[in-house]
Length: 313
Image (cartoon, rainbow, N blue to C red; front, top):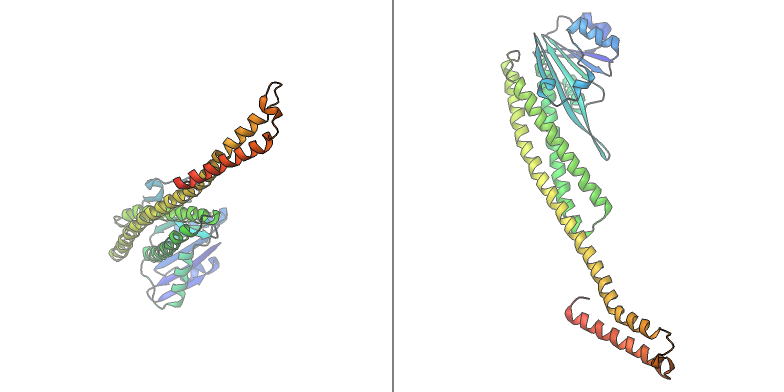
């Protein structure tokens, strides 16, 4: 599906493919493409000169696959972080800029792009350059990453308190999820810094957009420091949790070890007096049974008293 958003300094209009002729003279034409068909890809090529990158390149991490200039066109492959209940997803978006055209190709709804479109619809102000659309989307995504990290920081602080109250499977799952979210955000920030650093060096980008992108890059560097800090805090919580679990396990093992030690002499006495050899003088004792019970009780009580004096129980 292709949505055409035509804009100028006076504002933006959202149209369909059939209405393209009405806005061909606008200074900015944004083609927002979601789950495109082969026919739509061919249409974009004929109108804007867009060439669809190979699917295997879209997930590549090399900068040559993330940012590329070909003639008058700029190709950008940028990932956006999506949270879905207990899962963290990374969704790539292709940005294509050439002349007055900007193409965004995606296969899911990207919140930052949807928010930017709503802002354009509700604002009387427009943009004069297509790269300003990219700058606006990036600015919103940077704000969203900052909000996520702020929320993540609060949850990590609460989690540290909960770890000392209980050591449950739910807490372990929370730690794993927060660690994955933090690492994913860190990877996304690093990717954006690399891409945008190349973008602001391009001669095809106007000075105003370069200034806006430079501010976003500076913010991303600041957010990157937060991910390092949260990574250390999560590691600290994991170490605390492992330490508390080890203490609990050691306490349980100690109790069972002491109990086994205490009752071992009684078991030995019972084993000795339980033998039925023919020539055993104790076998015919009149008071052999109460004697063995008293001996086992005395030895057991004596060991329990000694263990308590040592502070082992």
